[in-house]
Amino acid sequence: MIIVRFADEATQRRALGFLIGRFSGHSWASGEVAVPEEALAPMAREGIPFTVEGPATHERILSLRNSLAIGV
Image (cartoon, rainbow, N blue to C red; front, top):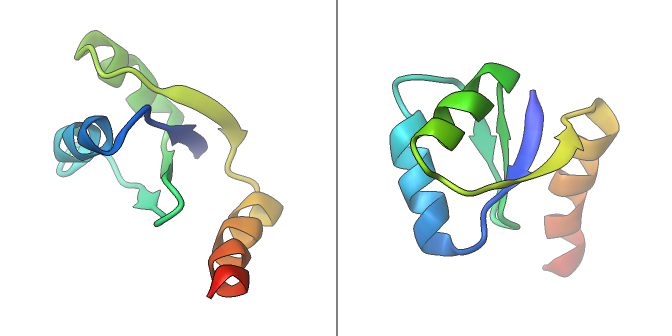
């Protein structure tokens, strides 16, 4: 899995709509989305701009979960 980020909420909604039913993944309120590496090329072909944040390591996922708990 790879963590990606979209430029704005509208692009994220468009991307999630495209991904649902095609690929598994997970999104966080912070804006990051975990997608399989195989989803990157189809999103690019679809014209959905995104920024790769890096691999979805266990530590990275924990930091995404914990960042919301700290902010509350």
